[in-house]
Length: 129
Image 1: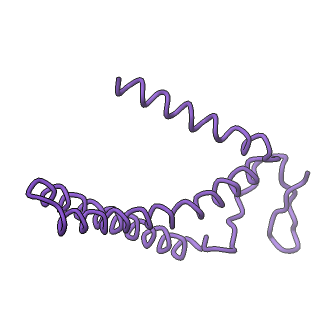
Image 2: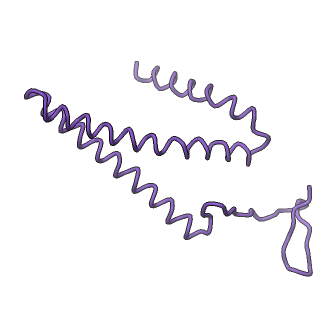
Image 3: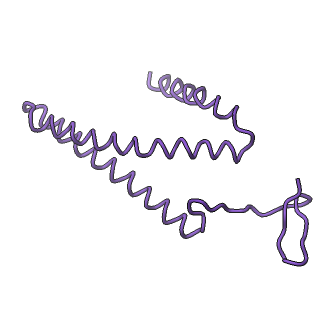
């Protein structure tokens, strides 16, 4: 059952991404669309973690004996989820600053073979289309 659920979930995710992939003109356009979706998704996930914490707090405060344990577990999971997401966000920001790939900046991949023309005046290469 679990394997079937995983396969169905992966298929649904791929099916949901099909219109986005079809509307993308190339790899760069597709990656920009994925990036814009992730930019919207991350704050929603952090909000969901905070809501889970407060839901667990409410169960802990207003529930019975069994709800105390369950509420405490939900609170801990909510705090851990927000901590992990914030830590990963900080790690990504640090790596972007270290590699020079921060927001608004792009990394130009190196040219290989006939796709490049040598420019002897500046020592740089430019792509030919």
